[in-house]
Amino acid sequence: MREEEIERLRGVVRDCVSKHLYSSAIFFADKVAAITSDPADIYMQAQALYLGRHYRRAFHLLNASQIVLRDLRFRYLAAKCLEELKEWDQCLLMLGDAKVDEHGNITDTRECNSMYLDKDGEDREINILSAICFLRGKAYEALENRAQARLWYKAAIKADPLCYEALECLIENHMLTCDEERNLLSCLQFGPEDGWLSSFYSCLIKKYDKENVVEAKFRELEQSGGPNTKPSDKSVLCTLKANTDLLACKAEYYHQCGEYQKCFELTSEALSWFAVGCYYYCIKKYDQARRYFSKATSLDGTFASAWIGYGNAYAAQEEGDQAMSAYRTAARLFPGYHLPTLYIGMEYMRTHSFKLAEQFFMQAESICPSDPLVYNELGVVAYHMKEYKKAVRWFEKTLAHIPSSLSEMWESTVINLAHALRKLKRYNEAIENYERALALSTRSLSTYASLAYTYHLQNNYTAAITYYHKALWFKPDDQFCTEMLTLALADESRHGIDPIVGSRSGGLFI
Image (cartoon, rainbow, N blue to C red; front, side, top):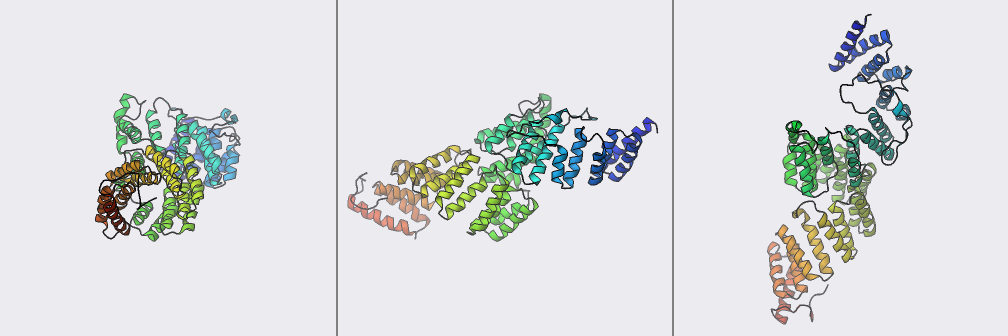
């Protein structure tokens, strides 16, 4: 058969593959490989077999060739066949026994000298070593060796930043802490035309920076595609503003920092089992919420938020053992995700095991030192252990780490800080923070009651009476405020209207 006829058949094979006519592709590729015995044609036949889901046949064809251990492309495809067959140990053997250090650097570079038959040099290709590292990571993860999987995923993205799947596994499975994610991105070698990709990746990682920093990243990506983008490409990249990946990233950020209306506006058209579970959780139908969170985890066992929701639905009904089981599963599956550890601490705090709770909160802080919620819980547990100075430090650190301006979401933290200051008899500072909390929400009975109580402790009976009345306006039958108002009125009648700060002959003490 003449060369032009063989080349025509190769074109037929490529066209069959593009039209998903895999049986036809296999038929013609088999004939071309039989005629030429060319390694490139054997590879094309194996590729057709793989796409047609004849994984065992494709593997035997590749394994029988003399070039499989010398050409990385042959070895990689043979390992992909073994991946589909779920023969993970054999898959790793086929890929070789290279070593990787804790930073994702490959220390055994013998395979870098292997052959690689590149027939498509006109297009930009992802480094074959990156693909091999990623497949090693998948194999180790399937074998439940998540520590090794994490290292090989890091090696894959470092070998070629275009290997998005490796970064996706690291982020979605929460394999890295906040600092580890930032450090990894900082050492990636992006090409001059990949400025937009660098910006996009920086938006995907855990987002606990200040609001203006995160928002600037989104704007930069939406408006220009990144700092290194050519001017001629910027108009094209402006279309990323409506990209679903970017929208999902923004929605996650808004939900994380308590901007629920913005989050809702971005996700109002989305529906999933997880979303249904969240709906039932919000309306306090926890049995239904559990059922839908369970469906979400059964569909995707690596869906971290669904595991957290599943545990929270149990915790809401004080079913601690089941809640702990869900949180521990999440902590095992996602070692770089601090929320499972944080919720384990919350569950221990609910049962008054404060020392254990503090240990888990500190562990969560070591994983993610940027989340203000961690410091809030450390403050709460310190308050319960009557370590009020420590509680003040943690609450102040909470407020310092809030990414945006104070909103109603953080009212409880401001009140907690005020309570701790009151316990330390720093009454003026406590009053400042109670008033700060009232600026966030003016319909809180407990804040008015606490403010009244603090004024009462200062012997400022007039102010105390005023705020007890305001508290009782919300709940006229509140026992504490009713009793304290009576006592304040009695104190005022005994001591006069003007307060004598610092001297008391009776009344209240902490």
